Image (cartoon, rainbow, N blue to C red; front, side):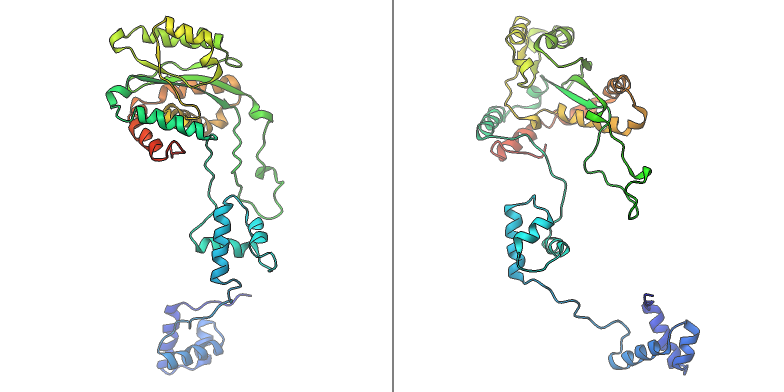
Length: 341
């Protein structure tokens, strides 16, 4: 049985009782401690004038500071290594535990955190992204607000988060309440197209099946985009942005946009961080995941997406579109590389 630790208040109480003439055994019987505990405490007080525990050396370190620095060099080269792999690469001839590895990294201010995922960027991608941003570095809000940002996104019926954890007792992994049930391919998905600008939000469109150039013209451009753009005079006509997906760049789509006087914004590949609509998809995804217990079919998922799209406020959109200069500056500072957006 673990020993009961004396609080500082009780220790001073014992010293006070002994000062009034109480014996060690009498104090022990009254407080429920063995008399040797009382005697050691009184002796410590006589020698040091204090009742706190003396500093203890603890377990000696099994690694030196030089060896700890070697571990940090390894982690800088291989930041995705597990503690087991690091243990073998660090001191292969020493018997060390993975906890020692984690303790050394923690002492250096490092911890295992969520990995940020971004599209793979080649040197050509970085050059094109940088050139695109440099050409628009001095655009003001009046210019940015003309841009209509569009994109497609696919939402799974059942989202499985690989980082999900469960609080459970040992040997209860297969208890039904501790198991997250999954279905193949997320149970199906719904693809939607959306478009926003600083001043408006167009209707959400459900994409049936795989998106093709013909479907993009018939279900998106003709009924939604061109109709909306025709409501603007040519002098103040908006600029349409879509990415470089194959259906968007088919010859039929390019000719259709030109014939309907729709000006498009050239777009650098692999640049979702420059499209504020990506953050709107994140908003919808979190809201749908919060409703996951109430969304059980693809039809319910589609209805929920359209409902939540209507709930996205103009203030939320303007916070995103109004920050385009910051996004552009971030890409320029990164020389076309990754940003936090």
